Length: 434
Image (cartoon, rainbow, N blue to C red; front, side, top):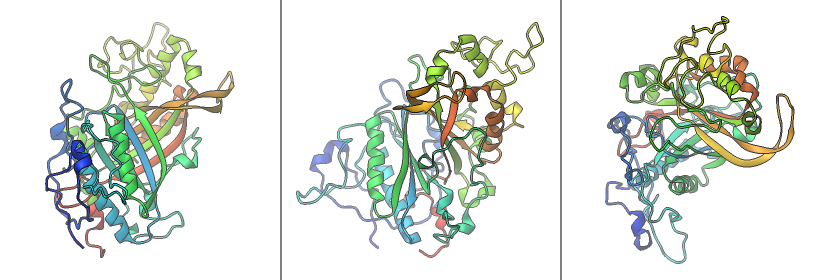
């Protein structure tokens, strides 16, 4: 198999029309990781975000502790290939393309004869990198098919932490928005750059994997900085563990020695959560704040002044009632209420137009309503002691459930980052015959 030297000068989007070259699938070799993503945590200065480059190669994959970009596309794929070698070849193609696009280049070096389709659609021509990150994940179906068969000889290498998510109370999951054998999350500060990247990766999967579902998302940081707000109008992610704290990330996010080939990777759980916004918007402000457990304007815990103030779960009012209600979201999701369990939230709001819905709670209205809400994305070292533990409590006790419905779901093992000359997920295949 011929090799591709990806260290050669790349083709910038600005030189798209004059480019002429060809791509051969790389014969990557397994190597060690590079610098940790935590070394590039500083937010770009104003006016520099669109030109900034987030490195693709490194110890950890980008897009996990990377400062959150404003646009996201998450896609799940079903594999149709029958040979493990085809899966490996796809991951090699994806690795090269993701690295190129993160630097503002075309997904592949280009040939432009008039009688052939271009190797890159060109929709990002002239656009800057926009802090593009591409994060890859492996679903349970990569290891064992729906028929229980070991599809690619990988069943024995399925991580113990990559469990099938249980059915939670209140779930109304739609099969077409759940699962997948592989996942890609593309994030960028320019929606066209993000879509271009996903579109090109999809094209590279032709004949090997089919897209199963996709979810777009957005977030808008306040002009003065600080925590973003979700569609309910509340600050979202206030209690996130600090991504600048390396020890905390090792504890909460990154897989340790217990993970084998997954060491330095992470597990992502995604949930598409539709919010009954029409109902929520007609709810009294005081009740909204009791549901969340925080002041809507400041983000402070009820009874406190500042967003960063710690939750006081023992505080009572003059009548002996908890200041932060017992069924408030902030209380039930707190680490202290879940034996210290924490996850790293990287959620995005979504708006998918309107659809016909019936409300789950009084006044039981039905009709055309907004199909909008939260695309919940959470990274963790182990979903069993992270998301699953926390959500079991939320699903049965959280008063917010009267406004939210989980309709989509997925869990994926996000391997460690790739090093130059290797490919994403190489450790999984190490020692196996191609």
